[in-house]
Length: 349
Image (cartoon, rainbow, N blue to C red):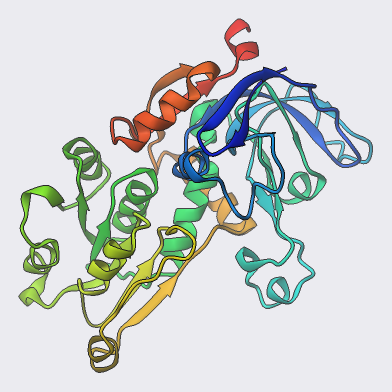
């Protein structure tokens, strides 16, 4: 099969590699659509310490397609030809964190990598917990949004947001836009900030009441606070960029007693600073939120199927597999939100 194979940061090659065969409990999916993702862009640029356990390897992790083959021991409800979508991991449900109910912190997460290809083998653990039939009326590219949306659902679930609250979201990339939409669905008044006018336009479409073009204001923190009741600050602020300097700004945007969700993953080894006076005397809650759980994956698919999260707002077009690096770079430049990648086998179908 054709695949985009990661060798090293900045070194991705398009090669013929053996197509996978399903092992016990596994299914092989013929990929119809894969999506570009910020994590894939960061992986292309600098590798990934957790997921990239060996190289060379196909990469990419957001996809949907048709079951091509099933291995021994697979639940009989999974049959060749079914339209399916899978998350990129599954918890073990045995480790200390899983037993605490913190499945996103599982010590033995089974990861799935290799969506920029014509076929992918879905591990047994994911088949058992995070493989879903695509609902009628939902396109492949829309279904492939399930995994990143599950992460955003987790982020909002861990951020106390009440009807009428003011929520600041820093970053209007794909995840930031999902967070904007979910906060708006909770009844919040959302203030979205970004460097891209086009992305802020999408944020408004998804429910942002106010937008701030970062390059047009001298002080982003002051600009956000000026839009909050009495200038006190937002009830909650979410960072969706992954830069320490934006983490620091986000902490300064909330009111006393507010909650800060540092959602964007920064480069390994990064640090940031917070005023001890601000943290202590304003009684701030600062937290990080990572990944998703099977519950949030299922919730995300339901939001897409119901249309509460409109998929077309996130997908800026299609490109063939051979152009995946160009698509990732365009995403990194802010020219697109996400791009649907079409493998050769699906183009020919």
